[in-house]
Length: 285
Image 1 (tube, rainbow, N blue to C red):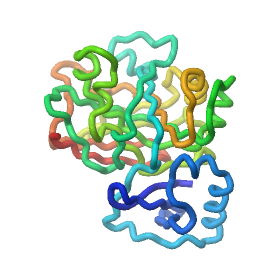
Image 2 (cartoon, helix red, strand yellow):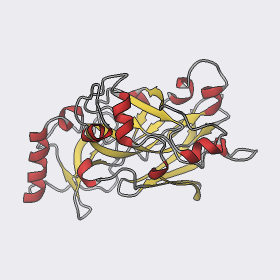
Image 3 (cartoon, one colour):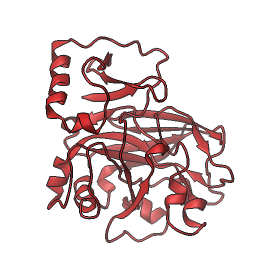
Image 4 (cartoon, rainbow, N blue to C red):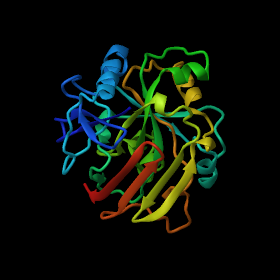
């Protein structure tokens, strides 16, 4: 299933995109697309049954905003330097263990919402990423297979990052990761049954129509199942938590001088096969 949330900021309603590309209203069946839904097999079965029976009303998509496909996110966990190509382009060794950072849920916006370049920023960068949404509580998992079994679905993410804040201002990476609007998600949460192997996906990003990132999840240093297993030994992962699993080569920070960091007026488009497409216009905060 392709689950999404549509409507004004703070008033999104749950919806579904059916196999014909028709937008369907889920608000008569469920209250939201969130951790409570993703952990409830019976509720998900009711949605599937309603789809199969053709019982869901049609929503007019014209002019309708698409929000983050997951609501009430508890935490967002980021994995750094998780593609061989990206590590190489920034002159870093492949890490022996996953690099972990946190992003605040209040940085999340919809896939086509405006992204704000922070005041004083000179190195705002793009990062196309595969996002993983947890569907069952994960604690001390024993294997990558168990990790995948705890995944509810997948989504598209842009882990927007201010590089000077991240690496030149002291402390942790969090300064460059948590500026407002820095985590566009969606358009859809695609349930795990429709993505049998998350390591066979193309990941692409364009800036002002120019292809900048053209990667593949097979280049990940730590695969999705292993990432979930690993994290479960350092924190409890709950239904509705989101993991952004790293970015392939092609970020601004990895390009020759003068590096093409984002400026107000730039347009970024992101796509992962099967997970949809995003489009953000960048403006000054």
